[in-house]
Amino acid sequence: MYFYLVDVDAFFIIVEKEATSSVSKDSLAGLIKERDQALEDLQSVESAFSDLHRRYEKSKSVVEAYKKNEDTLKKCVADCQGKLKRMEERYQALKQQAEDKLITANSEIERVKRYNDSELAVLQAALRKAEMQAQSLELTVEQKSKENRELTAICDELIAKVGNR
Image (cartoon, rainbow, N blue to C red; front, side, top):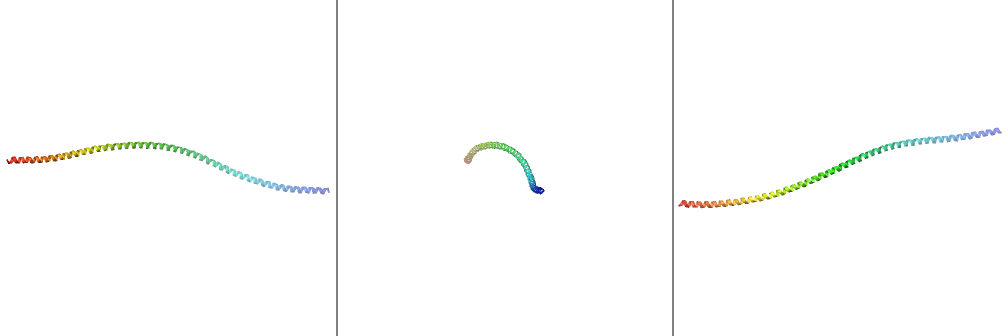
């Protein structure tokens, strides 16, 4: 019987070993499947990280380009503001110069106008005086002509009287 017992024990050990082996195989298959899934996930994460790193580097270069562009634009704005300030100063100087010349020209026009007005008054007075002299001379000529006619008439009368005698 002992032999029988040994065989039963061996059988149980074999069955237990096969059961354990089957569980181990299933467990091993599960672990291999988990490992493959983990490797797949790792590959996916590495790919995503690589993509993220590539986008980060691209963004970094874009930001650097924007900063350089911003610096260039700031410098350009500063230059333009300087030019604008100089042009405004020049404009103000030219405006002041033009206003000064306008004041001078207006003063000169006013002076010439006053001079011409006074000259006109002098000339008008001289014209009135000349007209009055001409009128006076005309009256004198008319009076002298009248006197000459009277004298001529008197002379003719005297000649006629003398000639009749």
